[in-house]
Image (cartoon, rainbow, N blue to C red):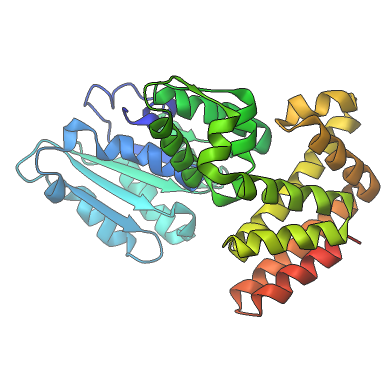
Length: 332
């Protein structure tokens, strides 16, 4: 499989092995950002001595002066150097200024890639990158786009992922896009020469219990059914799911409620919600009902409780009671 990230980048010169001097890559999705960076790492312009001509730095951990020094260094036994600065959002105003000065006069034999989860477009750095024509943002992949994305990932492997299979697999979204892509890889191997990947294949490879448990928890919490939600969480916990996954699932549910409320407010018919949000119609109906019951402020309070529970977990407070207490709160 060729580098998938190449399909999302608007720079054909990379495929030709003729990269430019400066690029900016922004995405709140770590997996998509990593894939896009892989296009640079695999670019033939930085071979054959890649280990000598590729350097990676992290904003906040490495001095920007060191990054610029690396960018000013000539390639060793090769034509070009690649210097990558990760976590761009960690740069302060002074360090951004140093990068802006470099962008105004870059080293011709170096490609500097600035990558991060976000960038304030009002800053001098953002304006300097936009002026080069090489600033690209890969947007967040929202729940309604996940099934389509999964179908694309299967297509890259020469497979056709059925819509029902894609929607079932999308229920694992809290595990992250990387984990989802890993499941698609496993499915592609599992079906062998067969081109089609069905719902039954997903249930066999991923596990009926896990899929059912994830759906059951979010559906029960959305409906405010405490006993069913606690039973679903107990099953997920017994299957080895981490509390962080439950937090991510519930945060995603809050986002889905906001999305459902927005669509309904804009006049979408409730029967069309499932298709619009990439969810089974029954699940979409439950989410819509919960969204209407809580209202926008109630949903934002919900998300605030989830964020608070996540902070408690990070502080090392008791994992079981944090999740169970959160479920009780959200089911009220």
